Image 1: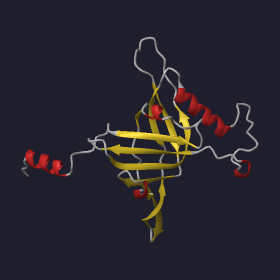
Image 2: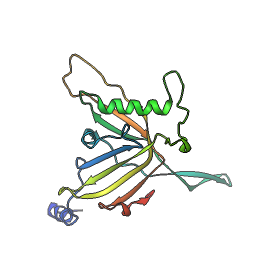
Image 3: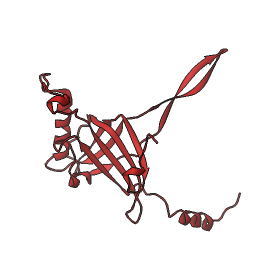
Image 4: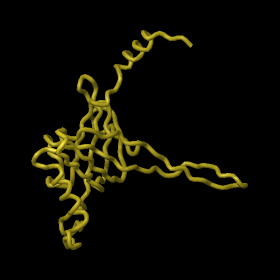
Length: 191
C-alpha cells in the first residue's frame, strides 16, 4: 500500500500536531504543608507517566472452558523520578511522610493518628499530571486520589560520576480521574 508523507503530515497538522512526552507538569499535595511539594519543587519531577487503565478479567468456568467476564478496575502503583537538590528538601519531606505513615522508629504511633474527632487526618494526599500542548495550554489532566508514598529509592554515590542525583518515589493510590482542558469539572471518575 502506497502512501504519501505529505498526507501523514497534513493529517497530523489537522489534529493540532502530536502530544509531546516532555510537555507536562506534576502537582503533588499531601494533607498538610509538611508533606506537599512546593510549587518550586514540583518542577524537579523529571519524569512520570500517565496512569494505565486496567480491568481485571474474571474467569468463569462452564462446560470445561473458561470464559472471561469483565471484573473490577485495578490501579497500578505510580512512580515519579525526582532530581535531587542539595538541601534534599523533597527527599526529607517524603521520608517524613513515610515516617508519619509507619510510626516512629521504635514502632510507636501518635495517639490521634487518623482520628477526625481529634482533628488529625490520615496521611494521604493527591497528585495531578497535566499534559500540555506545544502552546502551553492544558490538554489532559489525570488526578490521583488518596495517594501515599510506598517506596523512596536509594541514591547511588560514586566518585567516578559527576551526574546530577535523581531517585524515584513509588506511590499507592485508590483511584484516578481523567479530564480534558483546564476545568476541574471536566474530570470524570475512573475514566
